[in-house]
Image (cartoon, rainbow, N blue to C red; front, side, top):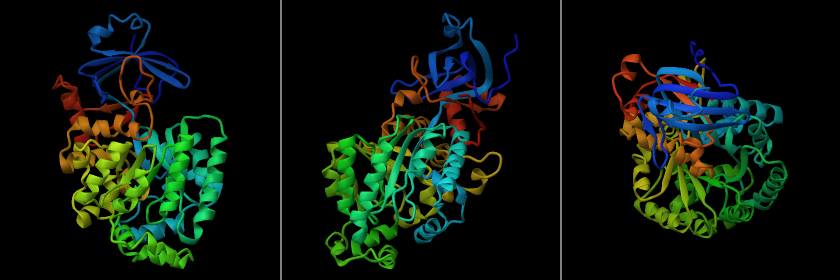
Length: 453
């Protein structure tokens, strides 16, 4: 009997996937070439019955009844986790490289404010994520007209993705009490809804737009209600200028919006770095936190982060293409993610928004939003080992979002988020018995990707 054509998705049933190789980044990694995977698909759930060499799978009792999917020139991996993205900005599309202040103005001017439009943008971003092999996201539910909004969370629940929708809010100066009351109102409404594949989380936007009282409030709420929490930190030179000197575009914006008051000088303009500014608040927390970007780090900042991580876990989402888009390497030097990893801090990858993605990857038939492309940038630029790159877009990213990392593996008995199949040239697929070498090709080239489930 001839195997079926390569499926875009698998219907309910038991399948045997025969492939050139398969690899994951589990604590005890699976790596076989060639490989076979026995997969049971039921509505809303996919489970791995066994993963091994073809000869061993032949001995499994379920192998005889399984439908064979023959992929002799494909490498199978788990699907991916995008630890930080802004799907509600998808409608804006890729934009020319700009400074951070210009980006803020762009987003403020073009962000959707009507529920139907917000939903459409989030769902478009979700489809592009799924096309890029992503099964779970840490999505930012962007503030609308400066206030917390439940609409991105509601849209993401219907998207087919797993993960966390982090409620973004601003709380600075004259807006603090009003902003925190609105954030609590939306949080209460979200927590009253039934469970779904999407968890609700909190995102005090950044230390230049949320003063310490706002962080303390949200960290207390996250600890009380067991909510994931994230924040942007140490992203731009404008952030350093405002926090350290209480000057620059961010102060100008606060003044223009009528939010600035002189009491803010008790917290800002004290000569601190963004990390040092937030450190006292982070020491008080009882829950892990995801820190996004960390482009601007001094040696003392890294020591602080290591100290804070020893108290309660810190996770870091690095967005390489976003960092390059805003010129962070030219301003701050190379990102220090490898030092953070060496110090025992969990670092994973995110994409940030579609605004900073290249037109070639974010438009047309192959449009996608995927940390796979950020991993490919690190493979080219920094020669990062393929196994670490796979960790950073699967199990490390899952841990950062509070998801079960086993769902992003090929572990026998695991319920999995999905599987990706990478088409390799037949010559390459047949030239090696090492799945790690096949994985290196995936990160080194634009190897075509399809979702199995």
